[in-house]
Amino acid sequence: MYQVNIHQAKTNLSKLIKKAVNGEEVIIAKGNVPLVKIVGLASHKPKRKLGSATGFIDIAQDFDEPLEDFEDYIE
Image (cartoon, rainbow, N blue to C red):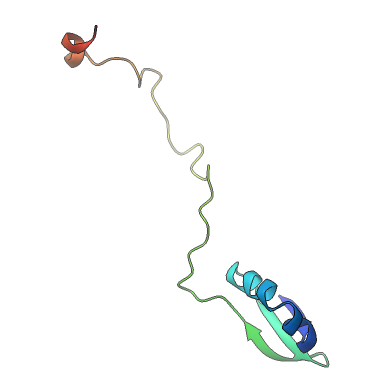
């Protein structure tokens, strides 16, 4: 959770929206009294993380060897 006052919210609105879209709750307060909560919509898809399937897939050592069925086409 990230809390800012109204002045900070007006000054940094785009940064606060980015935080909310990335999953962080942003609270806007007046005099340390929370008034508004900004959260991202559920329909927002998070960015994909490359390499997240590392270790889940095993590739055979000979995966790139020519197949017997194609010997006639290999020079």
